[in-house]
Image (cartoon, rainbow, N blue to C red):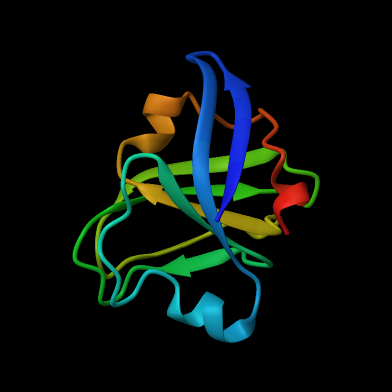
Length: 116
């Protein structure tokens, strides 16, 4: 786990982020894992599409460019859904409600490149 520190409209933030960079790790994602805590995330790299098939809880999805610019935030994605963002290089999966609580919004920069 790495610590992702950033500043948003809600103040200084820090999230524990696990990086899934291999094909196997990206395919497994959060399946068969306990739900994320409110301070945790999973960064899929590279990834521009996420499915929530088999998930037992909703997620927030943050799609980012290669440079860490947030392209799109999709909140409370329920199980058995697919979401994508063609221009994304990374996807950050968070517990539902975490993106809003942390003030993560389209247009801001997250320093995810140093995590990969």
